[in-house]
Length: 589
Image 1 (tube, rainbow, N blue to C red):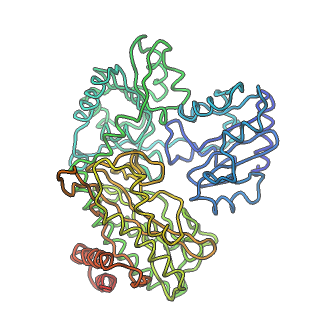
Image 2 (cartoon, rainbow, N blue to C red; image 1 turned 180 degrees about the vertical axis):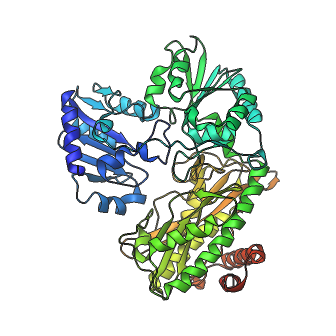
């Protein structure tokens, strides 16, 4: 079936129960940001392949909501279907709730699959839908998707404490301290990356995310892990047993929750708990909600994680210098395209001994393709790379030493004046973050305004976050901290964040410069404790597109010092033409 045929088949199923609107989120039972192939329901029904978005199908319309990162991509991918793009945070488009309020009758039914719909989204929808009925036991996509991919069967593996920096026993003890302090008898964890962090295990259930699909329930004296037991070898089983972790089948979590005695209190995160799980909890159990205890804990990196991540960035920095040297030589031949370049980058990374996998699909956008924020080249239709304009490379990797995420925009040849101006503005925005000293517990929203000021002053802007937390051999996007509008999460010592301002001009060019940083104490005085961002990434920033007259002396010093440090750190690991390329890239301006 093509997309429009799938829509019509879905409507026939909806009609059987008189359902007026069916919601298909981008989600799995754990509300993961990135999904395994088995759970790409929204992609199946809409044809849109971006990593974020929600589809809504009514009796006579089909809409797809996504954010600004994917507007250009969604326009292309929805072009031949009934689906209409609805732009999130654009005043010209209604929200999903506003739309449903308009098109669903007063006592109409709105349905979704409760196994992949979060409690947070359910409550938000319920509060705005008035007398309409919400139906959560409907999985229509499974009825249509006859060749749905099977779930992975790869084995779980253990992350040695020399990389994790803390034992599972210690982490569990710290969690129980929080539970005791707040009167929680049980703590449910649905976020797979949190479970893997807590137990120091890793898996291969989601591409680019070394996690395993599982649930965890912690009581005052036991830890229950619900997982496909076929993924556990004898070593892992013995390890879990040594740590007093009881193993159950994946679906046994429903039984565990039903069997919690009444009057006990359970804590869960409504953003990372699905409706089916929530409904399974004994009705006499008291439920407390908030951000996962584990999410807040893992956001503060220990000294081992910080030390190892610095090593990961040296490994990745060396790899990227080799790649950019190869790219610039190859661009003059006319034989390279974006797809070939992305595969070469993966190949170079995989040569490193501690490489696990890429941390996301590499973004390689040449010229106007770079304006598509999350552009991923394919083996069909990729642009040929030539010695002109700008190319944007956003990529990363998981190593045993940690997770990397780096973006560089490189000048391959002559640039237009507006490309140079835009590049320099983005660089000023990037530098502004690293020059900032800020009070302890400053929120991400305030830091976002500091980063964007150089762009705003020039009447320009970008519409993705300026920075996101980064996991340790887990997910490349990690909360709760973000440098972004609307983020009220406070930044604290030893948190990781990316710093990645950008500027995107449709049909012309795209620019992004991204480093990863760790929050460190700058100084303390009578006004309190001040923090700053310590850079973790060492890959030269291209100075060829810079209009130096737009930079202050302080900004010029910063870029020269940064590139000088890149040369010092990476030179011992390079030789021949790669070393010469590094030296040329690090010359002062």
